[in-house]
Length: 389
Image 1 (cartoon, rainbow, N blue to C red):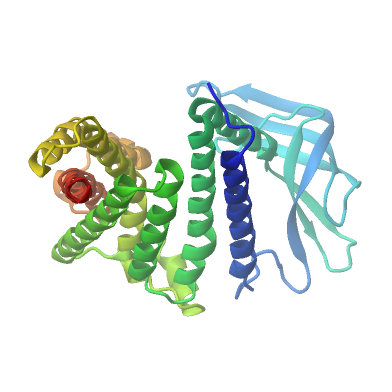
Image 2 (cartoon, rainbow, N blue to C red):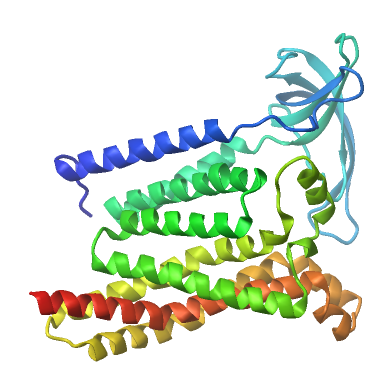
């Protein structure tokens, strides 16, 4: 495996890395705002904060394994913890750790955890509760492992893929979400996000050229087609962003911001389908480009046919991937439906199931339509380039 350690490629990658990191830092700063409601303020001037702590001792515990669920431990532990961060750093306090079905955390001395520190304004009364294990280090370690694996397997392209991921996440978290919060229509914001993400991510991972241009244009065209199909079927089935499960909390947020709830479903489908569409679009464009390089005299029909043959092997698996992703996110709901023998008329016409079906089918439509669209765009661009030469 060959890595560039000097010269223009290294300088180019360093410049790209600096630009992406600078972009992320800037959008993080710009996206900050003051919440209309401080969820960490209690009555009066009392407050709650979540701080890092370490278990110094386990004085007693009464634990037992669940009779039916393997791996679940219930009971309680009497812990002594030392707070590591915040206003009360260094303070040693006793804490009772209750183990239940959703808090089955058994702590040993030396184990780090997150505690909820409830304090009165004068600081005389302090109540500390166990929140969760401190998972940040392990999560970061896992992320670093994936990044190193991606760079080792992909070389320079793998490193650029990491930059593309950072750019995409930063754009969603610190650009798209704040825009939607401030009243920009979610549909417009999602289309803008898709255009910018495809326009930056695809050249980063695939380089610049006609194949990237075809993949980018094809991605945007297919997403717009899928959005139109989704809009039609959402209107026919009377589904909108108001059918989300968290509509009540969203209504409260909308009352103090410019949030437009109705368009969130459109944006969700567009964003969830973006990655798969970009993937298949770049694969088709690369395949057509390879055929053109091996046979520069190939005509439009030959290049288009090659793209279609390549795409037929991919569209089924890609569409299946999207449907499985949406199904996996609804697995708990599917288990409940099976358990209670719910009637098909109730299940298939419910808001939650209908939303999942619309999302899965709209994403699949975008993936399937990408095959002929990108094949045609790539063949057309490469034929024009060949004619000029």
